Image (cartoon, rainbow, N blue to C red; front, side, top):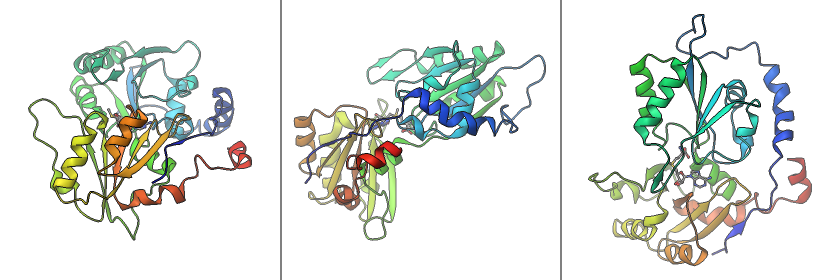
Length: 298
Ligand SMILES: C[S@@+](CC[C@H](N)C(=O)[O-])C[C@H]1O[C@@H](n2cnc3c(N)ncnc32)[C@H](O)[C@@H]1O
């Protein structure tokens, strides 16, 4: 199995990213920037855009996300929003950090929900920035439920979820006709009292399983997959800080990956990817092996 790889590709500076997207955004100005569901009455009614900021590389933002960030009055920002994304905001845009790291929550979820309602009621254009996609293990559904209950206009902008970002940048196609006909995303983080993950479903053959938020329980997750029928030699990978210059990819098998992860000091944010597709990582890697000329062109 290959050793951990560390990316050498430089990300564009914020200024060059702005220069790149500004013409795209201005040619798109005719399109509506208002929230989808209700037309804001005058005087201006506030609104909330729940925006997926993608897995880390700011160039993986959607154009709509970039435009809304650039037009926002206030950004309410999660822990895993990538470096460079906030630089797209206008100077003076208020930033409120509500990040939730494991075991350390700046604001409880309830108060985040209420904050969004309050800011919108003050007539502000609020962008709620969440890492990856807002509706994948991001509690976006709970925030939108609160906005609906409060009658606050809103929209949701999807983002590239970290599983897709990590897979692409690690050279691991999540599905492949020869190896995996389905892919399943699960979270390793459960609320107290919740039942265990459906290991039978996760351990199905010819499937890729991606487990978010699972670094702390890596050994027990790998053991559970083996106990429910996945071979101990099934290829498995951890992708840490995916799509950023700090990305590390650690490959192994269900049996030896936990030990390798401890030795390598893998820490969140990281994803566990399990399945035969992981065996392609060495061949399909491009992020760490891109020739200098191509990297410069990017
Ligand atoms: C609260 S979940 C949020 C997921 C997010 N909504 C998404 O769609 O990717 C946080 C988990 O996502 C994964 N994650 C997010 N960004 C990551 C990154 N750049 N590299 C690896 N894993 C990441 C990690 O498993 C992390 O613990």
